[in-house]
Image 1 (spheres, rainbow, N blue to C red):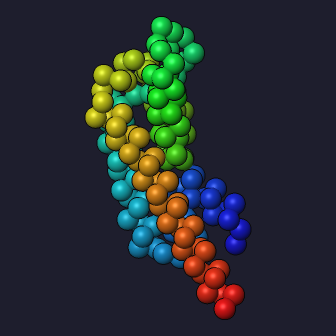
Image 2 (image 1 turned 30 degrees about the vertical axis):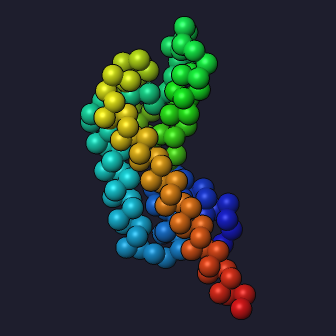
Length: 133
């Protein structure tokens, strides 16, 4: 198996790296936690799934950078993020900032998927090292 395939599946499918490394219990747990956290964030009207260029007018550079990093962090969830962008009604960035709990949960789901992907990479490396011995 290739690292690029592991990374792509691990990003698109929350916890998918565990699925490819045949850790089915970890996959099911991680998938449930990440999707549950993401859906809770959406239900709490967490916003900022995308930022229109005009929404950051009059905002200082650091705040604009943090806002764009927040969208990138939410994109780490993968397919749930892409589905939410396609089917969730667009909410302006400033409206979404007022619903901090939902927005924080959306970002947390992305970070959990990134951590699961990093762990799957470590498991893959251990398996490759064990196979070479």
